[in-house]
Length: 125
Image (cartoon, rainbow, N blue to C red; front, side, top):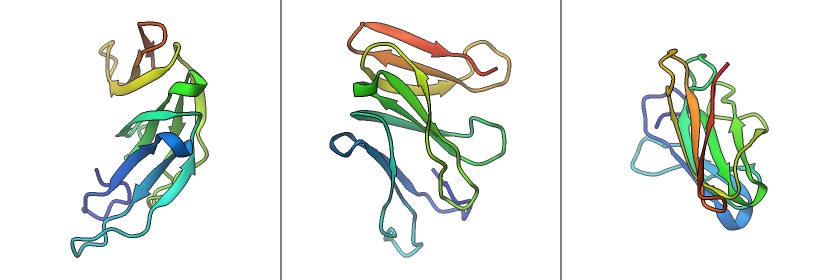
């Protein structure tokens, strides 16, 4: 995924023990720049990287299992991200995906909630 629009694949990971997500920008020579870390909720388990606000910039969606919520970090446009905005999910969301579940051409957030054995769907409004 390219988070800074330089046509190079970057890396975005959830840091479960660190309650954060990290972004490693591709340096273009087979290496990556030092990670930039952003605060997430408690025990982030997975991330999805997709444009959730239709600005043509890849945003980060993170499943915060320990906080029972989903965090959305909007891309500022140069590969940096705003502080997360959180949305309630089921108990212990472990996995997150972003798809258009209701065919309105807008990205919706889907989580698998380990603690409650449920699925949550957050529709884009």
